[in-house]
Length: 559
Image (cartoon, rainbow, N blue to C red):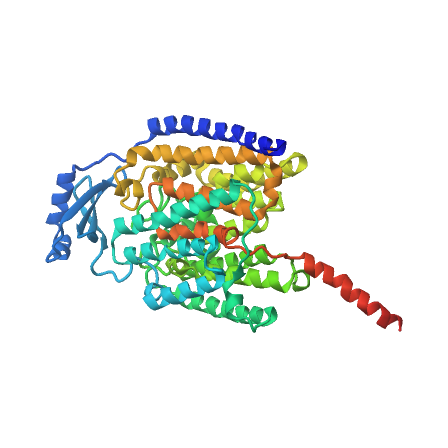
């Protein structure tokens, strides 16, 4: 073994040791502090109260339910859920006064949320076929096609949740999520490898089309997809509760009131998000204020989700195509960027997610923008900080974005993070006084102690192991940050960094108390920029062509 190889082997000792140490310390601390919401109503009493409820009794009549579960949502109520053969029939909440409130009716709802058109088998199949066409390669025996298959496996949790098979929906997502976690982790921190010879499937199936004609066709397809997203997304009949809570909180801010502890009844724990979640939606609330749940229009919030999906597509195009103008990029690179943007819009769960109006699509756009700005550290760190104040999880990406920086670049990035964080803090202090930040933290604490059936930990009864998984994610972040600090050159590879960001986000989702397929959009753009990205020269050929054309023009001018 050569000396460089031995040094490379030894180079992993410190990051690995630090990661293990952080995981051990965090594991002990999280295990000691970990607690689930205490049951405020004994399970048997909650079940009896639900069975005595007249509407619940009518729903359960003839359903042949065979299982009932009781889990604590918070310190105020219990969730009682009835199942028949693994399918949810009815879910109600029972508070400490034994008052029953309906939660969901698995027999009468055609879809859990969003637009039913996006759930249609023909729509899912069409989007899946286009996704394979845009992201697949030939020969078939390539790891990238396994990556494509892993992304398409997420159709299963969508369909299962549509039919109210909650446990099966969570379990069916695990193979794809775990596979992408491992693949992205190896891509990010493993040794560099030359990709095996492969050709984009689209090019292989259209050998007679030159890149220019394929580019035109892809632009038309993108325009059609944008129109589909607009029609399916805006006016969706069943927006998710998140967009109602966001618009309610934004309306509260317009009236000079912090959302925390001051939300109208209807959406449970609608004040559990960081302050920017509400603040960024205040322009929409000015034109479409929301003061009630489920009855108000949130079409502007749905439109924002559509625009966020298209913005993420544009950012992916910029990442893969490179160059700010067509002259500055090669046709191959532009085609690769267009295929990446199209594949993102064809990812089958995305259209459903957009039609719910959830803010997760806006987060996906922010993460794609941060990746696009990766080579501008201050701007990238600033976008990640904004995303963190919007949805918390991106704060976990800041250590790996700052670790490879030195000197003035590090100072500028830190200053940007601080500068971005000042306005949210000022807003909290201005509207809530000195208690404003603590009110926000108290509201967000629900995310770390909530009870839920949609979690692999609850499905398998492994809640006691969950703090260990959370500690491992913290250890991963520490090991990755030290690796980048010691080897800053790794950060020049944007595909590696996209894979690392995806690894961390997937780890956070696996370790969380609650999971839904809506969260897939967090990391799919990052997977598209790493595992599914084409390694084609983006700008160099175009730059070389410009002087050549200029040289050809000189004799003509001279003549």
